[in-house]
Image (cartoon, rainbow, N blue to C red):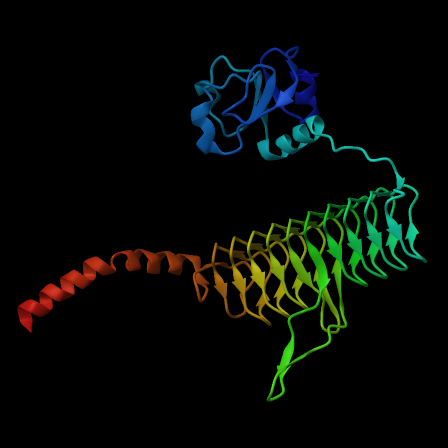
Length: 337
């Protein structure tokens, strides 16, 4: 357990209430009980403050403290960042003993750090390199000449094809496939001829890849996911794609071949990106946007084909009025025609 005073010091917050109260866990604001600490990150949850039984509540500086009476508070600049620190404190990851399980298969020529953990039923191909602190969970397949950096975690059932490079502090969740062939064919008049996919995939440092994601290898060069990018579950990234630093790719996004995504881009759920499209830095695309051509940096877009978000809102509002407008036109036709 840890006291409220110690938590306030950890997250650089201002404590309102007794500092000696002990905290034994962290919980959501709706279900928090005595002994828990909770957080108000989204203002829509303010309605739960009055009935919240938590022993401590972390709030932002924008909260009207006069409206919160009888609660122990820690006021911080950013409750979301404070939440991350507290969650890490109470939810430390399981520690695995370094070494290679006797039930794992390691091919010749592989270099695996003595400080890495290779768990049972892992297959490691020839000339694979794995850095210290990296954890490879059961039923992972690593092809020949794969390179994995330090402090990376690869969860069960991940498949990494030959020659793929994965950086440091990367997280890859269960069922993901990296380096499968890009979808490339040429019609020869009688059938579809497969284009050999001779390139690779490069995953840079501090990338997180969700469950059941597929990232195809390039046809000749490389598919690249740059540093700090986060990819949600069920995303398809095709051959020769580049995604810039610190971008967010939400669930069920599909990015077609040879597209270039800038840094700090957000593609919301079910966005589709046409092949050979260039998306500039700091672009925001709303859910289900169909991106059919290049997008200028800093744009906020929606709709299919994509357009400025404000324009899409206007069109959507008019679309909802179509039945009403149809009836008005019908009455005018009956009156004058």
